[in-house]
Structure formats: structure tokens, C-alpha cells
Length: 109
Length: 113
Image (cartoon, rainbow over all chains, first blue to last red; front, side, top):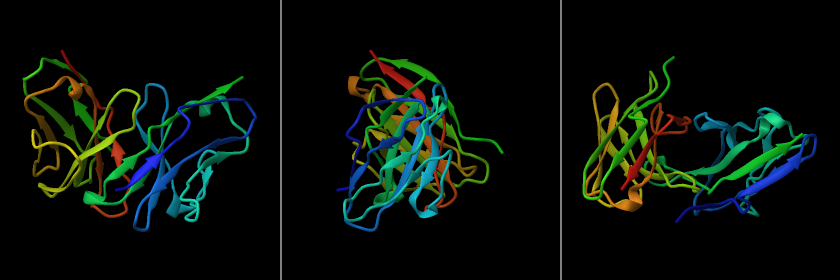
């Protein structure tokens, strides 16, 4: 069975500090990993996907198959980055998304 | 471009009742997936519809059922409601069942008394 784990429910950093939101997964096939973000009073939206290998809003994430991880990183956090972040894996029936429990990022001024 | 819309936004039901939630997919999208998000948890996959057929199902009992219409809109039906069915129900649409990203609606908040 596939599983996504986000070990931190809450991550609090000061503006300008580096950020790393952790994501670990288990999946028997070749995984496709995503990060979704939900800002206050907004809908869940795609932040980035590993196959694109792009940087969105300064965030990057590298798939590490050896460590089965897909951590989200940003070198300098901004207050507007405060949001709920979900790591997700696509695979299985209906190309379903399996989500982690989410990490709330709070960036303090 | 019209995004994913869900109705109603909030709903209150009692145990044993039945409920129907509705979703209009983003224009051009032919695939709809439904997710249940309990408080403090990530979304959980219920099922997916592609071209009016169920295309995959998560670990939910048969009292959770769905439909997709020719215009690709979709319904989620839940019979014999239980207290644990209280959650945010999210609909997501995409183009096809391959590697296109899923776009989410705002969800329907269902409360069971």
C-alpha cells in the first residue's frame, strides 16, 4: 500500500530563515510526487511536481529514491509563504493521489 | 477558464440520512476525482470518474457512490450517513487519467448530527 508521511504538523520560522518541509513516502512502483499548498481561505492548489524539476515561488523539491523522500525547501522564507502544505503521491487505482497529513508553515515577521 | 465548482458549500444532516454533493469540472476536463478530508488530516481518495465510468476506488464502503454526466459534472452520493462521515468533501478535475495535474474545488463541508 502506498503511504505519505509528513512528520511535522507545524513548522514555525522567522522571515528570511531557510525552510524545509519533510515528506517521506512508501510505494512499490515508480512514484510521481507533488506538493500542494492551501493558503488561508483559498482552495488547495498545486505548488510543484517532481517531474517538472522547477522552482515555484522560490520553492524546490528533489525526489530522493534512496531515502524515499521529497522534501520541500526554500532558502529564505517570506510571510506570504504561511500556509498549509501537503505532499502527495500519484499511483494506484484511478491514478489516485495519496496525501500526507499536511504541515502548517508559519512565517513570523 | 472556469474552475472547479462544488455545491452546496455547507450541509448539515443527521445519522441515517442520505446526501448528494455536486461538482462541475473545470472547462475542458473530463476526469473527476472525489476526496474526503477529515479535520486535521490530508484528503483521502474516494473514487474517480472518467467518461462517465468509475475508474478507480479508494478504501470506502459501497454506501459511497457516484455518477458522472455527459458534460463531465459529477455527483457523490452517501447513504446511511454516520457521524464519521463529517468532513470536507473535495472534488478535483483533470484532463484524462494520465499525468495531468488535478485541480481542486473549494469543497463541501458536511456535518452529521
